[in-house]
Length: 235
Image (cartoon, rainbow, N blue to C red; front, side, top):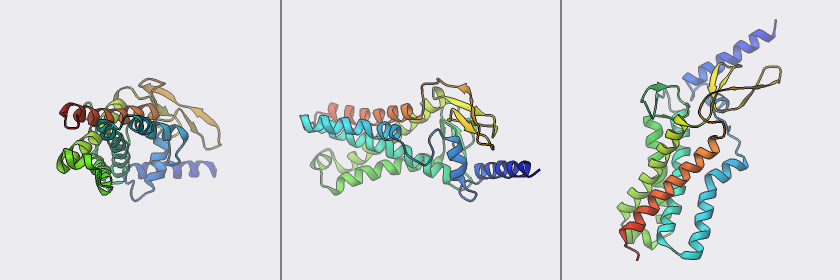
């Protein structure tokens, strides 16, 4: 008799936190929806920092300004993705739309975008450029202060939208039968501790959050690299 009320209370908490994440323990709700919770793992480190590490190695060998801007672009990409998620999901009474159809979806849905989240993505990207400005990188002033902010800002913003696009189209999404929610997680844990396999309802099984984050990081670096490489300012 005590088991049912506990289950109901848990479902009520999850339902409330999905509607009012900032006030009702939204971290609990989104940790259950996202493939990776608030605890970082090695896969996330490589997905978000691997491209930057490779670019640092290439830059140390070539001293190519375009590679340096690509490095800033990939940092802006992962920063934008993080800020978009954190701000977008924790904003009071948030609304989100699927990036491919603009259909309204629950906040936290793979491929969903919101005004606060997208604004946060751009601001996070600008923060990366501002950090580089603080260490007086001459190439930034040579390219132009405003131009550098715009390039890195839009590199991060574009990358966050690329992340959302792949999240909406090919990233694996599953149905959680325990909580009756769509999730990125392949398995869920029942009340009795039993591991339950979730059913794939959309996307490709091997396209997980780490792969999407890697593509996001690549797209941010690619835009910054291509712009600098084609302006021929440093040749």
